[in-house]
Length: 275
Image (cartoon, rainbow, N blue to C red; front, side, top):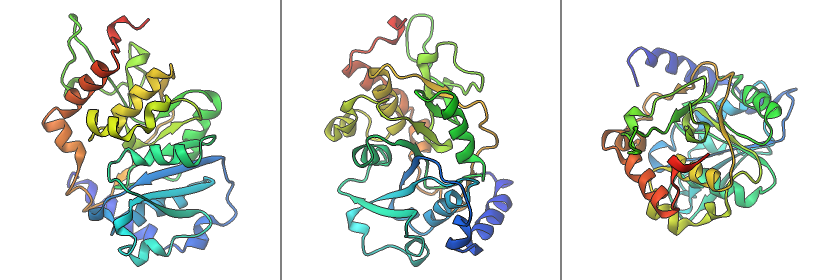
């Protein structure tokens, strides 16, 4: 987190912490989506802020579901446990990887629109309503507030991840639009291939890159991913949540490039041949 972001983060953390669960949900319209996220032990003490920011939206989802490893059942902090109710629930898995934030709700809510988000962010009040507006306009597309363009050079060689640049107006080749989970991504029903559930495969090919796994699953299903036209300001990082982050490791060591190559090789997906 940048130094200039700390005061903004602390202000929003304080503001969200003081609001009661009942006030979050009072007289709000509900939209037919499930918001899903996963968390890890080192963030259990702050993930209630992410949940509160989703409860604090202009509109409410049908359900907010947090996926945790089953070993954490007895470790739930009071601030998180107090939020459990009709809107918010905690479910448990037997694996830790971040893929579960979409894999699990696809199992439990196969006919629902799923919106995934990260556990170290506070989402602005119009985040959910804006994503849903784009969905209403393009109901069959995967929609993300943050995207990058998977980039190859003239000879077809995959460039390092740092050169996969964001492009708010869309990628030159739409099939190379990569949704980035941190900003929030909306998945309509039946937009991912059924191989999405193959835990052994995703832990082998892309153990630290759920975004890449879901992108491949969308391509196998011929689904289109787009950048939301109304993304607005980025979500606010939670101060103190970045001590353990896959994002920094993947970028510094270019593991996203390695994992994307593993995925495209396995599925024999020649992106330079896509029409």
